[in-house]
Amino acid sequence: MDKVQQAQLFEKMTLQTPARIGVGRTGTRPLTEEILKLRLAHAQAVDSVYGEVSAVTLEAFGLFAVNTMFGDKETYLKRPDRGRVLTEEAGAEITERCVHKPQVQIVISDGLSAKAVDDNLPDILPALIDSLAINKLGSGTPFFVRGGRVGCMDDIGRLLEPEVLVLLIGERPGLEAAASMSAYMCYQPRPGKKDSDRMVISNIHRRGTPPIEAGAHIGTILRKMIEQQVSGVNLIL
Image (cartoon, rainbow, N blue to C red):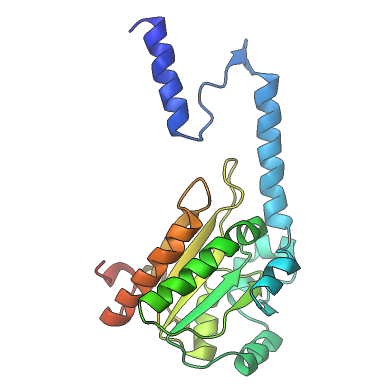
């Protein structure tokens, strides 16, 4: 393979992945331009973790907000267990304001990326609601959870007893995807559920799984969960 063919192959590879390949170097050091890009991506990832979901985003969809036992961001990062349990005040508010025993319960949480909620919710939530209608599924009262971990699904399930629950939550940001969201789904979530009982669609963002496409697909998965009365590794897709 000559140098022209190598260059063409390399260009093709760089177009197919966001990974940092072929960035060039001077001696043993990366190029200054690439170092600056890396630092920018790192700063964006940190901002995502420590940021707050915009009040405008929550107001646009009429979402009320409750807290887990996370306390603050530093504690949230060091104590994942606290993000799995709601505060007593949160439990009381959810119990008062939400429909009980809905067919589908939608919950949104910042998780590890507030930016994921701000960027993706305007597309994924309307698409999900449309998909529920198409699949003839009823839904409860959606709300937002600050400092949530995936396991908070079980605490919410204990309170509201939905048939299925979907949690739209910000993922741990990477250096190429600071605004990535996941959709976790579970049939009859309750304390004691295992990770293998959940379904997930991950990498939901504009350069990954498009939010609109993900929202439409979630409705189909939820319908199958209800039909088969199961989720996780035992669900037949």
